[in-house]
Length: 374
Image 1: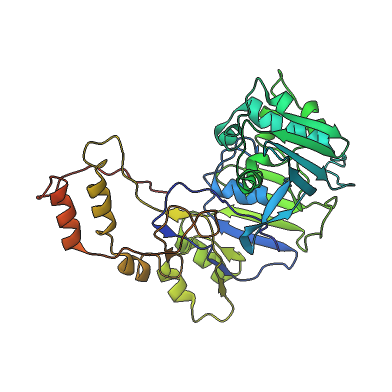
Image 2: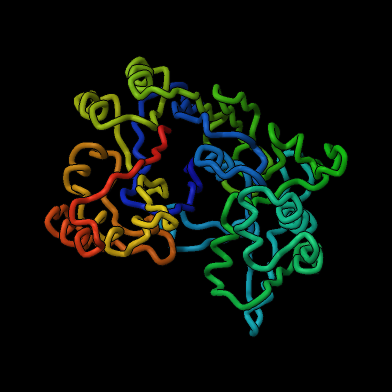
């Protein structure tokens, strides 16, 4: 399977989007995907925190652990074959898979894993918080993440956490393992290869990055050094195509295999085309609205509750996100720890009015809304 993992972090959610894709056909050893990939700003897993980059890295980098793409509630081995936590809940021990090589041909050892995780803390880019929240800092990381053998290492946290939480954080892209020897050879001014890795590759996953041209294309090729099952695809091409109508046209002409951003009307139009198939799987992408808790009105509990009763969930499910998403009334997407599929809310204007009156706004109020356009 090509997609090993997808973006797994979200802030808040009103509507959860499955990874709805429409498939056609190009050469058998090449997969051409049309997708809006203008969110990619770097190819360094220590910095990348965007959805598109997350998918690319999910298929080109290994981690200690990863979640089962068919059941995100389950963790599976990746580079680590054994893992355990000490009785006090603070020291995590990992044993690595022997014989693994990076795409460069360099052997992958515990030294690379320790370097990769320490590098995240030392660079301290946006996604570093996923690891620093466990008490890891620039000052202590060399003492807290240690190599204990050629294929073994330990990670020490500042206090006991739920092990499932720690392990899940280690499946994130920021915890991807990079080729220390390669990056050290590309280092400039002590940057740990940061400048070079922005547009290059230093991983060990089933695919390797051949080229990235911002707002244009990402080209992946099969990594023949990969330790696991080799990809049946020789190459994967992500073409940046912003407009859904253009993606649909490319599908119909056979210029693309998969379209990732089709809208309900496009899917309806393609329904009668027997050469094109639709597939959908759960994904961590969400559409949501959030209320600024520093605002004197929006911070009132009754106002927050009123908003929940002012959304026509059924209408949105039947129109705006038809065939491309599902209604989900929980903070976390399905598959993440703590997620719930309960749906206690529905459109009820009278109930919302009563709540606003209780909050001291019987005639409502005016507010400016900021909205993302991409």
